[in-house]
Every structure is written in structure tokens, then in C-alpha cells.
Image: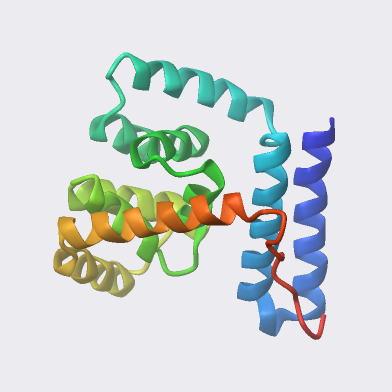
Length: 186
């Protein structure tokens, strides 16, 4: 019940803040997601379906059956929680980080994760659609993302992923001193 309260409160707070300050919508989304992620990492995610997804995907991973084909299958079938858990396991990143990457405003981090895992453009594109509002992306935006993906190298993407892991590890070690982002003027 506590986990469901975190999820509902986060959505309600985000909506209220966005209504009051639509000009800060991206900052509000990021800040609420960061705070929710922090709470979820301490208390766990908010839904029963997440636990079922985590159990099933983790079992696949332990059997060596979690791969690109599974991730693209999850993305195309809009199995969001399974895709997030799968990417989290394959990238060795916390679930909340992958969730932010998937629903981030520009999709850049998803391209980096996909390239670091040596996934194809089709898989990266499926993940972009999964995270996009109403699962829609304009042709122009998709062309731009394809160019971005083509210019990324696997080596650079893996280095970025490694740096991100290091940063998250350091942040976790300093969590007692870590400050949550502030929404100024709200």
C-alpha cells in the first residue's frame, strides 16, 4: 500500500506542479521522477505488475535467455516494465535510471544504452517508440534519432555507460549527503 501511495502521490504532485508552472514541465518531470526513483530504490517499486515483470525477466536473465530479441519483443508489445527491467539487468543499471532514460524527453540515453549493448537500430527505434508520448514520434524526429544512433560508436557508448555506473555508485555511497533537486519558483 505504501508503494502504491508513492506512485499515486508522485503522479498527483507532478500534475499539480505542471498545471501551476507549465513552463517548467521538463524540470518538474525530471525532479519528480528523480524523487520517486529515490523512494523506490529505498522501498521498492509501486506496482504488483512490476514485481511479476522483475521475477519473470530476472529468471530469463539467469537462464541466459535475456537478449536483444526479448527486449525488442517487450518494446513492440508495450511491455514497459519488462523492457525496463530487462535493460536494467543487461546494462547493470538501477531500474529508476533506465526508466528515466526510456521516458526522458530526448531519448538520447536510450540510444546510448542500445548502442552500448550492440543492439540494432530497429531495437533502439522500438524502445524510442515505447518511451514516447502515446508511442508516437514524427518522421523528422525519427530520422534525426537514426542519424544520432548511426554516429554513436559502441566503444563511446560503453564508456558513457561505465561513467554513469560509476557516478551512480558514488552517489549511492554518498546518499547521506546527497541533495534532491529543488524546483525553484514553484
